[in-house]
Length: 307
Image (cartoon, rainbow, N blue to C red; front, side):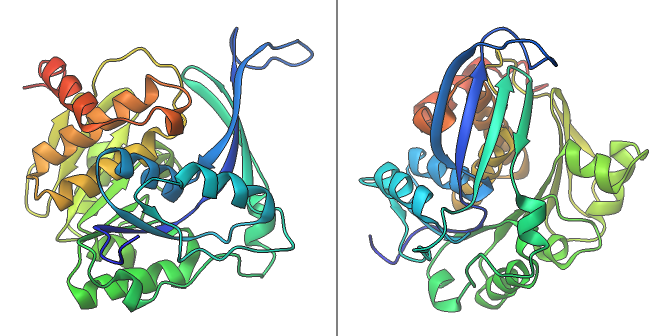
């Protein structure tokens, strides 16, 4: 693939074992029927890369080291796609980072060994380099890899390349310098417990020149910039098949919005349409939203967006 990819993505790239249940979520001591199961690329960066490729964007991704069990699946999946894997480090003596997700409609439960991995003191991800980011038009940075996530952001600052991040606190360097920070309900519950979403956004928007978006699942999205009043937008209404990858798809939609110089309202609406399509399908990596899909959703959902 050409080195002139439009987008550089840095963060979590996993092998995800997903299990869609047929008759509701797991109950203790009761049998559950599996409707479908898959082993496909996942993680915030892996999913975003899949979605951006489907939207017609060329991507380079870096981040999690790839182990033996994940490598074959990953290489086969991205063969023929406009996703550059050349920056990834492939291990020869480790099965790789994987998660296991049980899904039933609006409910899902992920399982893995991330607490063990992060507490091991060992590095299991790549280091962003200026030469890999230079020439890209937009970047997405997951916040999980500490100084290396900050390194990616600082390179973007140096090169004047806008970046999207997720779930970064109001007092973080990642938030301060981001073009877009997408903050989930999970993040606000963890870091701003008991605070109304409007109060959180007022705090966050005054600590950056970028756009802050707070998503709330089925509730209104809130978004604003420094000095602005808070804007609200309803999410698109769809029948939920699986919420796995919804936030990662939203992030990808924001990256696409930056690449196409969308204004804030247009970007938020586009990202929301991408996410709505994602939750209406399973498995997402095999059925990612296309531009045609998004346009249909945008046309259908004008009333749902509050316009």
